[in-house]
Amino acid sequence: MTLIDKYIYTVTKHLPETSVTEVEKELRSNILDMLPEDYTDNDIEKVLYQLGNPVDLAGKYREGKRYLIGPSLYGNYCFVLKLVYIIVASCVPIAAFVIAATDSSLKSPGEVLLHVLIQTIVIAIEAAFQVFAWVTVIFVILERSGAAHKIKWPYTGKDWTVSDLLEPQQPRTNQISKADSVILIFFTVVFTGIICFFPELFAWYSKSNGLWVIEPLFNVDILANYIPFILLTSAIGISSAVLMLVFGKWNVTLAAVKTVHNFCIAALAGSMLFNSRIFSNAFKITFMKTVDLSQDVFAKIWRWSIWGIMIFILTFCIWDTVSSFRNIHKN
Image (cartoon, rainbow, N blue to C red; front, side, top):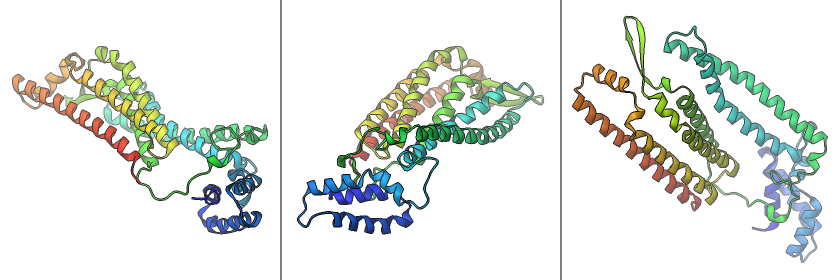
């Protein structure tokens, strides 16, 4: 692939699809006109440097100038805005749970869930406006302060070179869906928030004489010893999801982070599942009485359930790790 092809692709990548074909033809024609008859790679590089930063050039081709945030910062602006939206969206359910948990007027799990749903919608709408406003203000300040002229290449803060030009992309199977990253961040934050701050929600719910009886699954005092490790594992998981968004495709660094994350999940799960003190005896007794099982039968079912869950987690972690490295080499 020639430098001309790479340069044109890097420019058109920042343009709407409707204008890509026309700009590609025009730009290729301009470059060839600027080159001597028997041109070399050095001649091509000189012409490309004369044309300037591909991102800046793409901004000139866009219909309608973005005067609020210029083309050199606009790509960074969109990336940061999307990333912050994802992080905030992941935290919104946790905030809703906190509000619901501190509301003494809520008596039943149904009322709590309804309140959480309403608060999630309200907080999400408020947060969306706040995120847009503050991120926009920050980038407007950067634009007006002249920082835009210092960021010549997206996300690097350095002047562009021909070695930074992008290879025209063909459909690849090692591309990472943004939805996968968003889902991973969302469920990691929600699960971590619940198990660390509201572990009593993992419980056996039943009604007796018209009142809700709740038997928590975990012994909170024992579970508290695992919270630092849960938070660390979650932080690694969120980091891997953010890297998935940044890289957009599988590479060795991302696969290595995923491997560390899976190892932490397996180690933490094994330590918790096989610690019998972490599970509440009241939960076990309630469960045993509800399904009418003898103590011996229940003990056997419980033991095999623990092993089944552990085998499933190990299998998933191994499969996910192997898949991460295999995806690097897919075309």
